Length: 338
Image 1: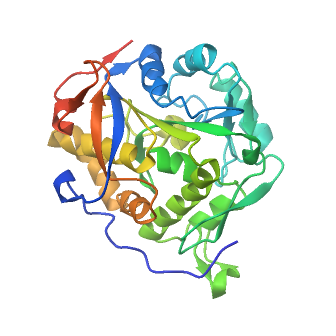
Image 2: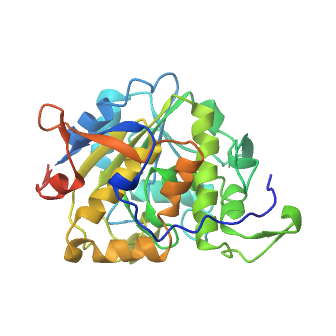
């Protein structure tokens, strides 16, 4: 169900450095090891809450997408640590190779996601989850199968995005769990007349979009409570999302590593801090993509909604779990990829 329109926050193009942030501090784990072993090492730090019937929320990508998380890494994680897990996805709002379940299943085969079950959760419609404290929504439409799961590991390829500025854990859940025909439409289209009629298909304002994505995410993570955690892979970071497949822009940002946290705001903020700490040549394109789309509003609005903290400590899993004092220390050290 949609509710009345509201006024966006207006700070999505302004980067706020750590020293200017307020509030509590969360823990984010980091490894430079870009390999299946590195993924397992990072995920292990946030695996304890992933119990019962386990979902892995993964962006499986358009056909032959060059930048998605390597399926061999995910296959090893599933085989060794989550043998009963199911990858979950939803159909797309845009027309393409994943806008129906039949086409989506074929794309999954092409991309190699065949080593464990994959559930297109909106294959049989949607259910509505409450959005507590939202100004755009009071409920969000998610795939009807989503409540079948007890816990969810959010496995995200961190990168740019044509509309969102960047795609981190927030976008992976907020768009990726919203049902294709309902929830995604509610997020991307503008509402009028108390939500009774629609603007154009992609009519939403930039900062309104960031807030709607975040409210959608809140519905899902509130549903799972303490049983949802986050892993972000900073590798092959184009300004394009994996939804662009082979049409994605070339990768110009250096690889970094893998982060994990139980705090969605902290992990996405840490990734942004690492990008901002890169040299101008290294981060120019990605920073431009994020700021011109007002993508930073995602972080501020999630914090306003009480979804997590923008302050954090970064724990180095490669060096006896010592605290990393700044994002600069991360980008100064070359990652290694297995």
